[in-house]
Image (cartoon, rainbow, N blue to C red):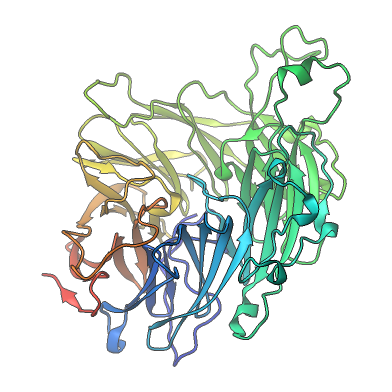
Length: 585
């Protein structure tokens, strides 16, 4: 869900526990770890295993001033990747993964009143690497940090020596608490490669006490399969663990009667016990999941019965689509897994071609049921470029609407009451199409091609928007000039430009121009020592304080609207030790 523009009132040195959310998140009120956050009047950037602070109101006036930088790592020899950051009050929580310690790193730094950064504490959370090419590991909801970590039990020689997943400062046995066995729930799913899934919840207010022994984190664990989707709503963390595929020997063994069903786990943030339900199907990704007050919804692909399956009475598998919208009443999620009745699964049109992009809004669910997914790599011409969106009204899912697009879809994002699809219709450049969901029927509202530009990052946070109550506003996303290396590879560490697009009240689109990204080499005194590949990207459009910003690598740029066009106003280079307010135009 795109976050609206934020207004921040800074009164003295007090900063509320809840800072403005300045990145595109799946759920309102659920912040996700990212590379840039805001604390009061300061922008905090995570790059190269370091934190940088930039004052957006130097001397109380709009501007940009680089204030400080602080290493999160302890030595340049450590084998650690720092990926995500969350902020709570004046605390910055940085999460990485240490291959030296085989544990997630959980570092705590403080932002002082003058914008300087102080390192305070470091913890380890033993686990295997959490990296995900699409999802984020950490969530922040109502002051609680939520993390999903896991272990393959086949990698644990003796279960009683499993020193996870509790926080430790040193990883030494004397400093490491054992996993509370009463918080490990018995398996309800038969599996070949059992994975210990752990959900750790930490009240970040505990970290505000500098002499606290350890934050009072609590962990809930499940033993299940290793194929899953992780999602967080405003009241719980959710794990959808997919059906386990058995080996040919197990399938042929008549005595094998283990349960291979999929299961949905719910872990509340409060004191309530977790719940579970036996479900069908496999979600496409975390964006296929959505929790409402009364219903849990999921877009899944189910296994259709074979035509000669005697148990498939009255089911015509040839004409059926395997895709379903699950609408599960939350009161069916309980302490004992019960199968969900088929009446809670609504059959949706089949996906005929191409990769799936999908998103929930408050009123609709949309997915690509046809998609050419064009990138234009190489010299081959692509024929029949286009896509089809299936738009499902949540209050009448049996009546989906098909919307034909004349472009491929590589990104589908929510922008308040609109959907924005990005992709390509030809070699001219990146195309954007807006779909207005405010009326009785979804309406194609606008299309725009950014000539000679390619979209350069694939993370959900790379897109952002600020849309007002009447439907107008602006969106932004990283782009690069059309060139041979243009693309959205996760290991692409070159900085991008940031392109901005006006959204009118009727949801039509118009280019607002591009802010040029980081230019040239870093300052000669600057050297990256740790975490030097930007696996989570390095460029973000930012809308806050009624202003427009661009993070591009180690540059922060501010733009201003001049004749409906974004022009550079000022920028700072984070690789320079001294902060300088640079002004453009």
